[in-house]
Length: 393
Image 1 (cartoon, rainbow, N blue to C red):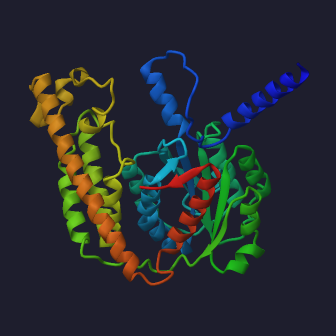
Image 2 (image 1 turned 120 degrees about the vertical axis):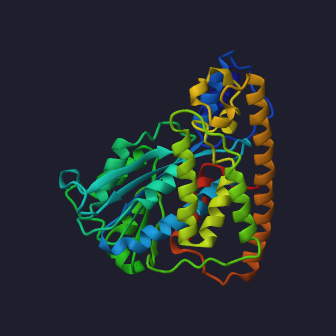
Image 3 (image 1 turned 180 degrees about the horizontal axis):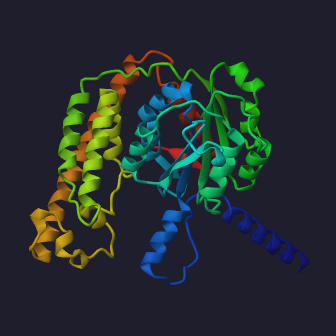
């Protein structure tokens, strides 16, 4: 009898350990769950599979190259997580927050630090905020900006979530009154990994504590040439994907107070990407064809994906011109038509992108990717695997 009790206790302890692990493996059987409302189930599913990344970018005078790389490489990060998958076959959501520091146009009383954007899954908004950044001289307090992001952002306590900070700059990590070791220790206690990106010589970054700032949380230390020009390889498929992106935009049906403004923002961010380089516009188009580009708050096609969505609850004055005074059946038919059209276009973009990636792989010279992209993707891949993520189509 004593042995049976011991085995039972060990089994209970094992179950408790598994339940706190990150991205849980797929189970063959599971115990019946209590009946709860459908909306509650959806909320739980979303919160259990969320990746949160905070970008802390130095916007002092010498950091124009870093900001340009961030603008260009945002879509590589998004497209990487399009293929992320938990061992239980669920797909994670992605939220990104943005801070700037080291700019003397920011308030001195706040440590020359500004939260540009809290955690958001709105990819157009994230792009807009990145393009709003400008550089100027100032004091660069790494410890304080990390501490501020820990205090202000809603990181959550769910152990299933992958939580990462990427801080980039070129001054000593030790600057400022707030000890960076206290800040990163606080991050580790919250299960947040701090990755440091020194914009300069690798050894100089080590000597100025950028490496130590990362290793204290199990993060990655990286040194990059932030002024290096990102090389985009043109492919025979780029123009086709950009043309498909224009058709994709026409499948969006704006509604509500923010609808028209959000459609303009979508178009503006397409233009910003194209202004940087055609390759950036292509990567953005690929992101827009993925599951991570969703706009339920202003687009009827995405909104209608929710099981509890009822188009009759939207006031006629909040409808776009083409749907005013239409019956519920007519509106639902129009939404279904645009949904089908969108899925066809997105599928074509994905198909052409596979051909594009094969062309790039064949023609790309070694180490020709963006410095920031290389640094972040490598860190993301390793740390996501620690939470039991895998990468597949």
